[in-house]
Amino acid sequence: MAGPQPLGDPAPADGLLPAGAAVGAPERDFGVYLHVPFCRVRCGYCDFNTYTATELRGVKQSDYASQAVLEVEAAGRILTDSGLPAREASTVFFGGGTPTLLPAEHLARMLASVRSVWGIAAGAEVTTEANPDSVDEAYLAHLAGAGFTRVSFGMQSAVPRVLATLERTHDPERVPLVVRWARDAGLDVSLDLIYGTPGETLADWRASLEHAIAQAPDHLSAYSLIVEEGTKLARQIRRGELVQPDEDLQADFYELADELLAAAGYSWYEVSNWATDDAHRSRHNLAYWRSQDWWGVGPGAHSHIGGVRWWNVKHPAAYADRVLSGLSPAAGRETLDDATREVERVLLRSRIREGIAVASLSPQGRREVAGLIADGLIDGAAAIGGSIELTLRGRLLADAVVRRLTD
Image (cartoon, rainbow, N blue to C red; front, top):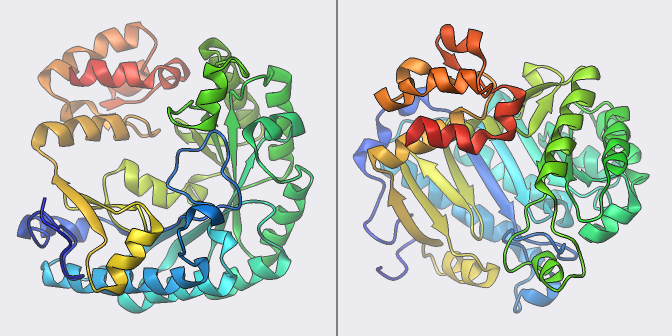
């Protein structure tokens, strides 16, 4: 692969986005993801591209906003030069890491650069992730004043013993406080939960769900703990210090979540996500599942424009060196072929509640529909009406459904 290219080039291998990336662009939403790769401590289960202060090799967190702004400004030039029509950002998402480790004015500055370069559509969804112990009332008010509309708190569990295993640092009793402060600031609220932590019981999980529901968030996410190779958690399990999460118990956790959330008025709209109504679904994440366009800013961030996908160098020091030298932070790219694009389309679209059109499947995929109905994995009435929609059992076995529809 060729070496670093000027900052006007997102694709070190072969230049600017191809002209074909502009085809259909007016019908695709455009979002912006800003990755803030800093954490106070590294949780044992996490394999995200994040760094604690001792891992930064001289990079200063205080300089990061300026570096991200340089990439946003270059991105605006790149998209213009590629012939893509001007599109305002319909969603903006700050993820990490812990974005709220940075001062609120730094997040506001990064958001202002998005507004200056592309514009932010009226009614746009603007979200930041936050740990409950990383914000206070003034911080959240500052975000709201800067144009943020939504905050997603990493609650994970309400059980101190479970939080300790996950190496989360917040007190569960802080969650009601931060939710109230966010509400007072006029922000929508999402809570993220994790189930299947080694040693977690069904009673523990019920307590976490009930605590989360009691805060009346607009949106909840519940993710099964995945033991990723290379993490501290994986090493602890390999040494016998912790027990590998049990798949059958994780299915029980999921079914309990769906039962309690439905009873509390939440509807699932993606396998791991529930909302009070359609207006409070995560529009940014829906754009991923619907294969819309987005530009990812920051170390390790991925982007997708018109079937072209690329990703940035991972370490903040390498990222800083690139953007401050006027070079692209991109490390590589790929253009999806038709077969890969089809598998991804089925994989992503089948996870959301409205599903995927039967008529859009391959002939082999359509032949699988009757068997999937018989196995209780997709809704029969919906399939007869022309749509593949997962049942509760199908959500638990979503990967198997995708294999049958695409093999």
